[in-house]
Image (cartoon, rainbow, N blue to C red; front, top):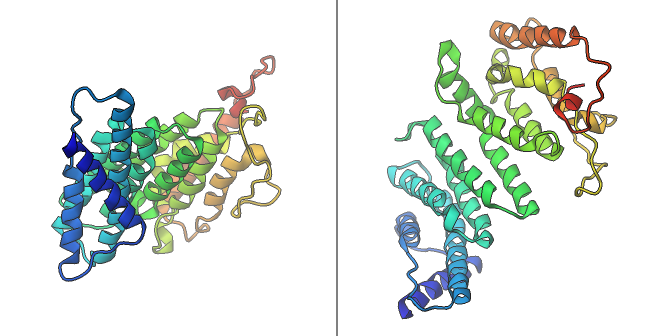
Length: 340
């Protein structure tokens, strides 16, 4: 019992000190930060038999919150100190991700936000460096699985929205999409595509009744589809694997928001879209914005022109040429409604 109390006190005081601005000083600062991370990750809470259920739950909640809260404040300090990538830095980031994924189910709801911040912080810097020991796409897969595991457990709508935004900002980058295209799609490659799988999963979660998820996801990936800063002829390459989705999104229509279902800002403005954009066309507006930012004919690469633009045009012509069933009344929120 005294040992368990000591562990909880140690982590709580560590988190309090870090929250108040405590810093590591002196020589070997980076290695001490890394060592502290491993120490915190290795700490376990063992409660004695006979302890009341309420006290047990309180100890676990405080322990997990202090643990992940401390780590969420240490990770940025490692980033500041690590001027170059090293095996030690990559190892601690990978260990944080592995521990986060394994701990999600046992972590109280209150401790999920700091756990998520740790996973985001570690993930952001794992994908930043080339030449890592673990292949990029495998690292991405591990990061994405961890983030989804947290999303599945989170019950607060505000926290869930925050996490969704952070996740999209991390994985929907032009560089990562281009890496995924080159490693798993170009030259008839058929390797893992963790970003595309995450994109599809998020759209599935959004369904036809959660347009805010569609808007968040598509607003960010539509910018990433343009790719990183590069010669103009390569712009749009990493959108090619998503061409079927682009066609679907171009004919997608958000359902009308049910005022009784939750909060929705009908006056929400998006800088990238024309001011007069209808609320039911926000998602396809982002896709049209992406297409409008592609190079003009003559400057666009032949690959993008043939495999993306011509493909989208042909598919849209097929859709337009299909006669709708006029006798059928579509239910608001159904997939038929969204595509009419």
